[in-house]
Structures are given as structure tokens and as C-alpha cells.
Length: 78
Image (cartoon, rainbow, N blue to C red; front, side):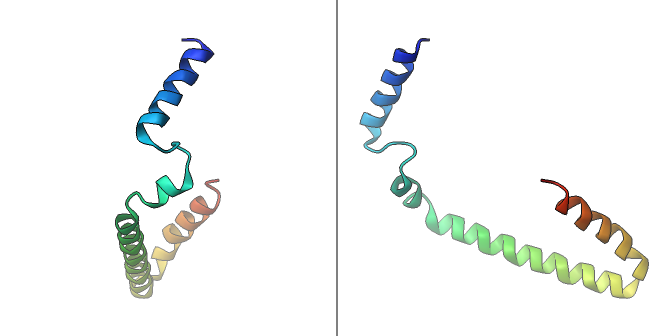
């Protein structure tokens, strides 16, 4: 496939959809309630995991070692 074929296919798809795929408004209008609900659920799950881990560390202090290793691994991930 040549460059002109790729560009014409993109132009055709853009014309059919009415908006460019990189258009910010097209992304904003697509599932905002769903993404807010997912973020809220992820935040609640993260806080639950944090509280549960805190309770486990209070019960058994040696559990702090794998938690510290996990936090270190996440911070070095990027």
C-alpha cells in the first residue's frame, strides 16, 4: 500500500465519520459517564486495598517487607 492509498483511506473514513479520529471533541463525547464511573471504582478499590494492607501490616509487621517491595517496583516501573 502506498502513501496516497493510505491517505485516501483515512480521508474516506474521516468523511464518513464526520470527525477526525484525533479530534478532541470526538473523544470527549464518547463514554464520559462510563469513564468517570470506572475512575471512581478504581479509586475506591485502591483505597480499599490501602486500608486492608494497613490493617494487615498492623496485625503482622513483617508484611511491610513485600508491600515496600511492591511500592519500590511500581516507582521504578517507568
